[in-house]
Amino acid sequence: MPLAPPARAAVLLAAGSLLLTGCGDTKPASAKAASVSLRNCGHEVRVDAPPRHAVSLNQGTTEILLSLGLADRLAGTATWTDPVMKGLEKADARVPRIADDNPSFERVLDADPDFVTASFVSTLGRGGVATREQFEKLGVPTYVSPSDCAGKDNSGGGDGARDKALGMDTVYGEVRDLAAVFGVEERGDELVDSLRQRMEKATAGVDASDVTLLYWFANSESPYMAGCCGAPGIITRSLGAKNVFDDTHEEWPQINWETVADRDPDVLVIGDLTRKSQTAESAARKIAFLESDPVTRNMTAVRHKRYVLLSGQAMNPTIRTVEGVERVAAGLRRFGLVK
Image (tube, rainbow, N blue to C red; front, side, top):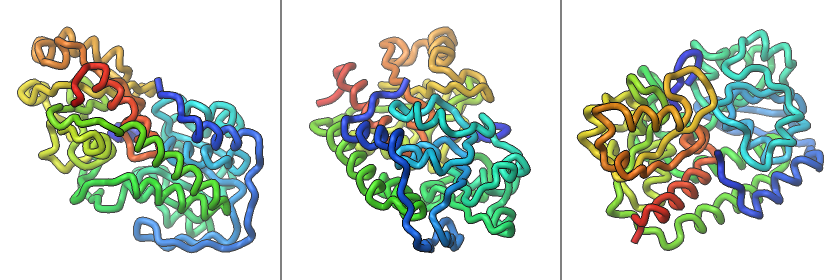
């Protein structure tokens, strides 16, 4: 997701997922007294006992932990782009919000964490909250979503670039990693099964091979549009459609509106964010811009009002990418664009 300074209306969950997260609101997670070691984004992570005072620095990892029924083991969360996922409101209300954006290193340490998670390499890197090494020197294990490092180069500017397309299996692997760290493996398997079932249901019978899509995350002056291979790529490929900017491997390149208009997508997938770090964060602001700007107002998708609104988290490689598939598939059916 576009990590602008200081960092860069969801559908209801399927019944099985609701049962899982609902259970997280009422049952404390059991802890297995066993150490866990795993390789994560170039780091060896060892946890000698299931964490009981963890801090999650991004919404994506937070929603996984809440979905696993681990609210009672979270000492704080930070960096939110959207309201919490439907079904997790009660669990989320039990966890302190350290900051809406990146907190300071000192603020995180004030929460006395025994484990720290993040969705992005940049969050636990130079210029972020702190480096992984800073936490590890204090004896605090860290974990970064593998979807932000597997097949991805984060060494340049912006949001990095991918040399291969991301798949949902990487997200499922993150769920299982975190479930193992917290000693709730069975819950991890249940959550993955629920997500797989939702993917299968959303894509059943959908053939959008003649449809072109464009994903706009944020910013009206220099808009961040999705490249080929991140979470929007998962959505696009699962429906058989085409991203008009699938010729770039950058995660979220900034592309001028003249180029966007020249590509003239059939459907615009629009980020509906509640944060306020960029221009045109909400879908309403984005649509108002599209329908008034002389460069964009004559685009096919704008003239036909073919808009699909997604949370920022659904446009990131998270468990809510499944929500993105569901919403885009429903939109294409509504517009009469699927075979």
